[in-house]
Amino acid sequence: MKTPDKAVTLFDEAAATWDKPIRVELARGVARAIINPLPLNRTMTAMEFGCGTGLVTALLAPHLGKVVATDSSSGMLAALRKKIDTIGLANILTRQLDLTRDPLPEERYQLIYSSMTLHHIADIGALMRTLHALLAPGGRIALADLASEDGTFHSDSTGVMHLGLAKEELLSLARQAGFTELSVTAAHVITKEGNDGKEHDYPVIMLTGKQ
Ligand SMILES: C[S@@+](CC[C@H](N)C(=O)[O-])C[C@H]1O[C@@H](n2cnc3c(N)ncnc32)[C@H](O)[C@@H]1O
Image (cartoon, rainbow, N blue to C red):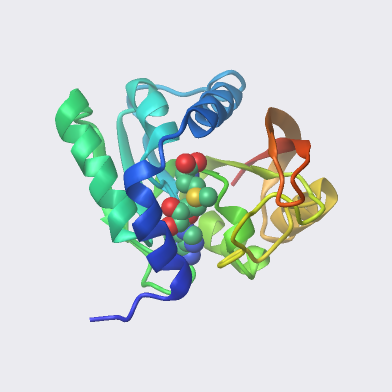
């Protein structure tokens, strides 16, 4: 059995109390930013990368055929499975997967989306290439994350690899990985107290692109 790293343990422990109103609101904003521009339909197979407790996936699943919700944290996936059993979201499958180190699934997806996971990934260029390889021809990515921030967002920086992400950097890495029809839009604004004790607005941006 693999020894979980500190970040995985942190997310395992956070799972039970993850669904706070601020995160539910964020998930609504991100889901809207995916549903509005993208042509979703009930025949599509999608993957969420870093699904957490499935806040975004629960909102997107009714618009999709099948969703494979993946995360490296077994605690997060257990919380999502409980939700699936309670609400009856029959088209969501859960899979423990770290796309930065585990063998890739054989399945190909029409859509891969994520929310607030990119800033936990050290080599985003490598991840973009992996996502490109996992898409079916013409498939799309929709990746939402914090825009560049000043280091005040996280109260615990375990597993935080980037202080948000710059629009130009995301576009450039996605272009280099082979994506086309690229765009970065505003998805949401998180208003909360930072680790400096002051209230901040943290914009969340969304990168979309086509294989
Ligand atoms: C900030 S949380 C966001 C969770 C969820 N997307 C949401 O919006 O509520 C980041 C998630 O990414 C997962 N994660 C971090 N690094 C990962 C990796 N390398 N592979 C898979 N999941 C990862 C964590 O376990 C955690 O559930």
